[in-house]
Amino acid sequence: VVRRAALEPGGACPDVVRVVSPSDDAPDAEAGRLDTLPYPAWRAGRDGKCIHFNAAWLEFPGRRLAQELGQGWLSGVHPDDQDRCITVHWRAFARRQPYTAEYRLRRHDGAYRWVIDLGRPVLEGETVVGFLGFCLDITERRQAEEAMRESVAALRSLLNATSDAALLLDEVQILQIINKAVGIFGNLQHPLVFHLLVDLSSAAFAGAGNNL
Image (tube, rainbow, N blue to C red; front, top):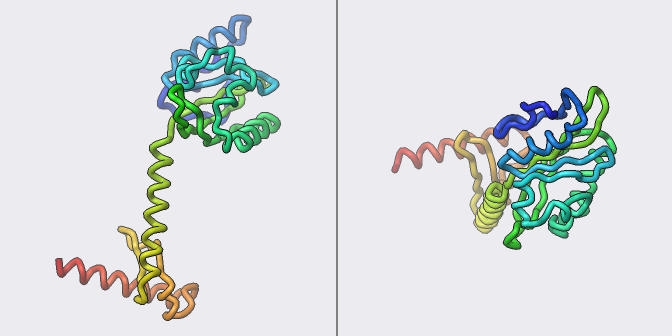
């Protein structure tokens, strides 16, 4: 059977998954354990082809097990992500190394959702006998990251539109954005110039706070 700690929901995902007490009914026992997980999971054999998907995985695309086996699951990966997903997947199998991949997977309603796929070698003794993978939906995280990138780009464009030198510091006064007009102060790579600008910005920020 698969070591229990490797499959616990909410636990840290190990770099490898070890098989203990191998027996003839180990594949069925392992599949049963995977089916108890609340998140999508898969199992691949020695050749890298998938031999099992748990109930949570099958529920996600709304497909039957037979449709997903082998490389059937790849049909649900977004066309723009397929080549990268295949490359990461097979490179890890060839090297017998753990991997992490992010790609879009089609849900049963036709919507593509971003998932993070954590693939880990399964060891029997010191021999790799396959891989286990665990997936989590990270769509909201990806959307938040994209919204942040768009906000930063919009703010940078706004700052560059002014002729005044402008800097953006975060809450711990780490420089995040500068506009083109800052170039009048000289080479920002020079530590004296850089620290002068940060000090000036910090003083201006403190003064603005006192006037509120």
